[in-house]
Image (cartoon, one colour):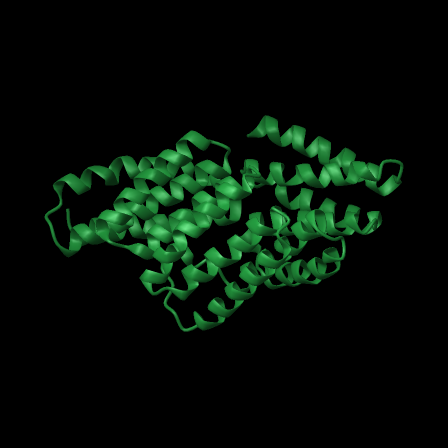
Amino acid sequence: MDKTDVRHVETLTSALRALDHEYGGGACRDACVALLNWANPLIDTSSSGQVLHRLQVAIADLHNLAGWASFDMGLLESAHLHFGRAMCLARESGNSALEANIHYRMGRVHLHYELAEDALSSFQRGLPIAQASGSTLAVSILHANEAWAFAKMGAERQALRQFARAEDEFHRSVAEDAPPWAQFFDLADLVSIGGMVHTELARTCDVKYARSAIPLLTRAISSDGAEASRSQSFRLAALAMNYLVQNEAEQAREIGEQAIALSGPIRSARTRDRMRPLKQEAERLRGNEAADDLASRLGKFMTASRGAA
């Protein structure tokens, strides 16, 4: 085993991460597992020193991606196994920035399944590790997701405070050389999470937050590219949700149709799951033609995508 093998793992992981980001976990998970089957034995054949350290980080990051792709496909047991292995290797290598990122991703699993308190605990466990790593971007990611968890819990003041901290840390991180597992978190993603925070606050605290969520989500949608299809589908679904909260069903139907069209080719169970609360909100306006039409289309999409998963 030499540096060439390590570079091979790093390069392929980067390519697979790009596939996940654009097309969903189903586009890369099998390849992640195959690469892990080849890469994991390299640890046993490696000598100690710099090459071994770099290999541990590379394989930890690959497990981290495999865990995320598994989660995206709804394979929770596999996700937890990969995240656990990633965490062990990150700790062995002493890479605290990667360790913090794994806490963030495990927290997002909890958040997706409406376990906001468990998610918050994961984010809070990751924070001192991120701070110790010296990565302000890692700290920003965790603060932003803390805000999201607080918003789901209806903790308005804490949600707004933590998001303000995330913004401060993000602007401080601009000159930082971000590691590959954190490079996704750009300004569009920060603004997007701000939109998600306000979307949740509109549902848990006060409908006035829909008015502030809409421009945030619109800005995030307009500033991200075609390579972020999954993120864009999530943002469109949230944007449609806010219009429904404001009883603007025509606008919601138009944006909801965009979300459905974009989500079709994405191999991700999460895109289907994110449509569920939108469908429930559309059903709240039962009797409104546009809302009924959107609820019907969402139901058909969710049924069809469940069969394709």
